[in-house]
Image (cartoon, rainbow, N blue to C red; front, side, top):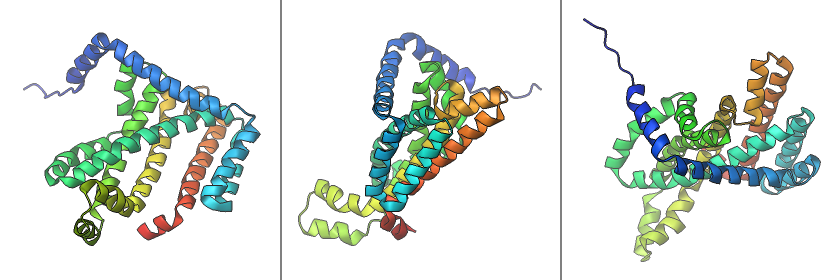
Length: 280
């Protein structure tokens, strides 16, 4: 009896090939759109000298997260500059910013929709489980086939990788809203739209902010791995250090990644301390 051999690639590969052949122009247009967005963010962050950009970002962190957040932001980014990783850090920040925005904009509406229907939620649960179980590399392969090497497949893979945690935490946030608040809105004669925007969304905000924070950290991890497909940024520096066996380069890039993760996490938590403490 011949051994059973199942190859998902036998099904997926023809689909990707068909899309690449018959819809190549559409993928080129999408790639050009995202490339322009990333280039615009990088251009803004490189208009002034690094010290001025670090100072401006530190002031923003000071305003939103207090003096500790501002000091941590200034120190962390200054260390990235001192390590010679400023250009790579800027590229990584640009990809993370775009990925988080698109992941949140996609994940929150999907999570709200699933929270309204038990049947949809049950149907979507295995899909979300699979998406969070798959290794990050799996998202890179089809993106590279469709968009080629570069920052665009890395960005799209990062967006997809960040959607499941945002969807799950949105469902959790909507399920934790006290029924009394919604009933009070109905008693006051508020419309469904008003109840959502003025009662449900503010009540769900603490958990939604945790979802955004998780999305930031997931995106950072994916961006680092995406250096293997020519995405640039800190991930590319780590890959270059590994391929050339340059321990110093790999170590400097790794330290910059850790610093960036700490800065993003602590500044975000510092901006909404009461909400995080309430959730905890």
